[in-house]
Image 1 (cartoon, helix red, strand yellow):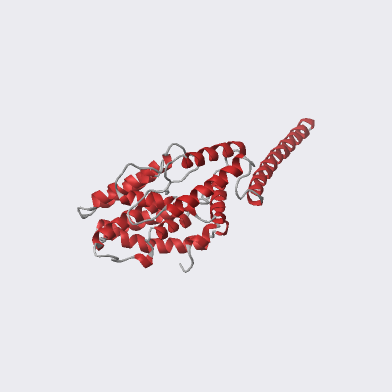
Image 2: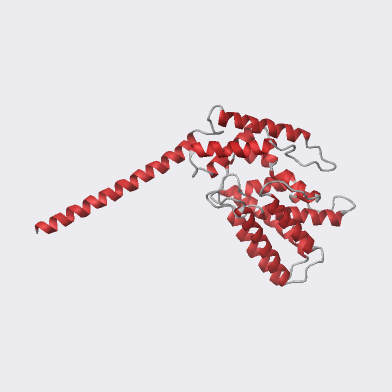
Length: 304
């Protein structure tokens, strides 16, 4: 893509065409990192890989998604330096770097592949992990994979399950690097953060406004209570991100608690609520009209 993913973060402008463009680019990356992780394609692994890739990518077009779309996935890949421009050896330890990149790629693509805002208790992440595990098992049972594949598969699973609470006791820097990237949106400039917060509300539009205000504040305050939002990784300075993220979270909490205002709340959310209410009233009216019509017909028959 020619533009930075940051520019897409007003996801109200997210389009089907953009999604398909990202789908194509992610497909190219998938083929590259598949062979890094599992070895060269055979005919059967090529078929398996393509079928699972299409299904996994298509899941990100589900209508309940507003933030957790392919835009989020591509943003992750960009932050983790896994996009097309980053493919290839980048340092003397190229083999290890390629393996770690493959782990990060598949964690990014699979970690939210199952996403139903109505599911709680880590069920989305558990089901997403199951989806990846089934894929890895299918590939492994139909080919001879490199010895390193089993440890990489275990790392991807660990990463996906760590996104349930977004914390880890692991010493594996790959896990920490992914978790940092997954919450990178918290450290974006305020307009981008506001757009993100708005999209989260759209995903939870089924939750009543009072319950959402209460629940969202609880989530945000749990983040603020942590000593560190971003893990410290050798060679990376996360201090600026830490400060910006905390400032953004405090800003949203202030809106939610003090002003009872949801970021981005306005015409789009109001229209969606109004539309749902209008549809409900129209359905009731239609049912009443049918009932009146049936009563009229039965009354006429009795007279005859």
